[in-house]
Length: 40
Image 1: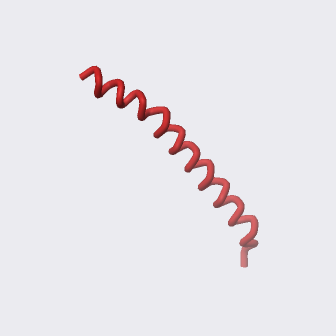
Image 2: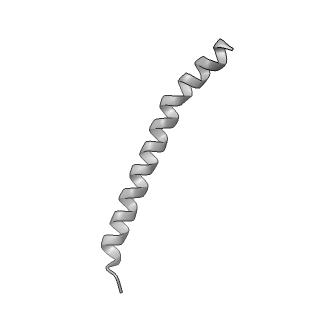
């Protein structure tokens, strides 16, 4: 069997990083989307 501890830590790190990137893109893109919708 593989060491589940290391695998879980790596999966948690990758999931956390991807979640942070998604939240950052959402929070940074939303104001621009509202601005673009206001201009139209």
